[in-house]
Length: 110
Image (tube, rainbow, N blue to C red; front, top):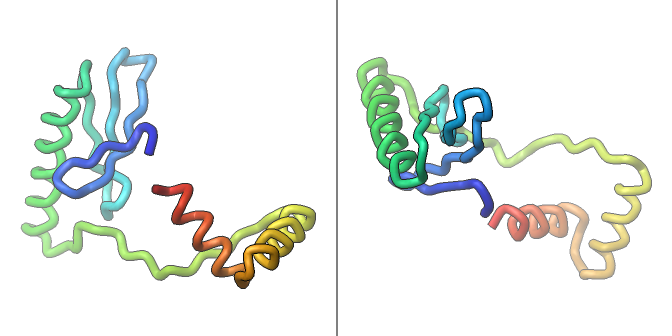
């Protein structure tokens, strides 16, 4: 995946902050904000490990589950024409619409 790094098993999205002229990482599967900044990718990895360690320590001290819990359900709003196109693509693949969407998301998300 582009702009995603793995730090100690947690995924962080990496962007460039033009105001600070620095790289910014933000963990996306955690229950709170845990972001970090650096001027290079190697430095970003180091700062990410530090940020994650502090976040996990604070969660442990407060008895908070550090990871977001996902139900596996979400609502999706589409234009009717996109809904129809997806239904046709699913049928052509021999899948239900739900199966087709789940497979498509899985493939796109890597």
